[in-house]
Image (cartoon, rainbow, N blue to C red; front, side):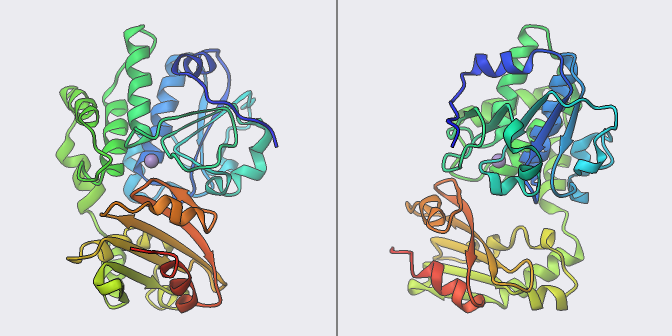
Length: 329
Ligand SMILES: [Mn+2]
């Protein structure tokens, strides 16, 4: 396996500086940190004189379209302009090959740089990874600020909106333990530019579709408690998803249902994307328990307090048993 080395902040800027048609990859099932960081990167590269195109194995969900600033109708690989001569590929917010989805097969040996904040990932290129950053948006903020100081990048409202949304989303609206004083300082600078934080946060957190509410209600009726109520698991089998007419993007925040219950220290959601034996788990900890290490046992990863993995199991009960039996609290 190729050895991939960590890059310095200056080396990242060096790698982004030459004019080159660039693809910006971000993780499947994209969230606001992925989309906001990718489209911020696109604006940075445009200012540096490069054409850039954001690419993902899944489309940007409708509720996050405001982060693309009308620049791209689609982010699927087929949307890449025909005259694009790809000479540089970077990824943002994407910790491991699996998270690239089908992009990994397409581009695996050609990725020049990954910019990310996940500490427990599996690097697939030379990388700039800062686990101290609550969001990739914080790293993008630092890049933007440096390049703006050098008068090479112009800070626009669209850029500030992307960065603020990226940071706000990955911190749960500045509520999670990953928030630092620097997180607030960066957010404060973004707000000073005049963007509408109430509107951005409303779009990120308060706009739920009927499907999402149906998913939440079904999640509440499928809540299982273990370890005297310290572990809560919400399960969502494929048959239930199909019966309610839901798709995977409606199930994104199911883990919050488990986490909101008093006394729960480890919250888990397990969904079954297809009628097969693969189960996706999202895990959150509110105690001092390393859920990234837990998920690593199943080939997944993430952060100490927020991580995910895929479990191979016979059925939902088996998947739930497999993950809960690994937890010792
Ligand atoms: Mn992120």
